Length: 114
Length: 115
View 1 (cartoon, rainbow over the protein chains, first blue to last red):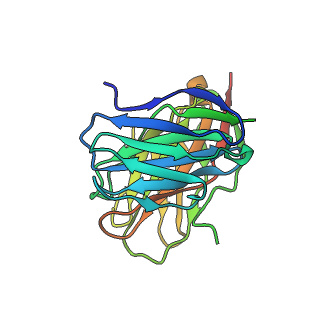
View 2: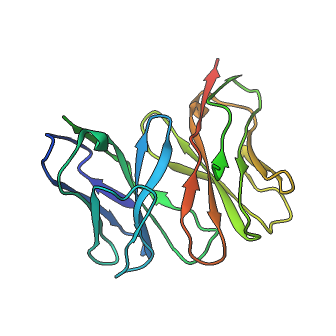
């Protein structure tokens, strides 16, 4: 029962470096999401993909790009990392079109940018 | 204005007692859904319970129940017979409108259960 798998679990970057966070789900879900979690801020939506082939900005998209590679995979890219992007990043997925279905989360990626 | 407000940054409860975690929401949609998630210290997000705006009865899932007061726009989580393993961060979230939409999360309440 893998559910939503995120890689890597931990990463340290230097300012200006780039990296891609990977996310894959095996629940045949249509929709996928990227959140960041900062102390005292709850979860804030960065980008989402309502269905394969579509992506949309969330609340805090600046400094990030995403790719919905196929139905299973949704990646998040930091092109030029900044210390303000130090956070815990969560990927989630859901069936999509039924509003009573919950989102299922990965275990998170802890990203530190020095 | 915040869409989801959790006014209690932290709550303490003794084992075996019941505890209520507050959540108020703000929406102009008639159709919406409210979710509660638990985040233990290990970091994963665990779905607990869902309440739809048209649901006539309060949702229940084992020791979790939702005190849904639509007129007051509140959806408080009630945990009965608290256990040490209930110590965690709890988030309330809302999905608005019909069909597809995203979730908006509150800032969370940290619950500590003492022996």
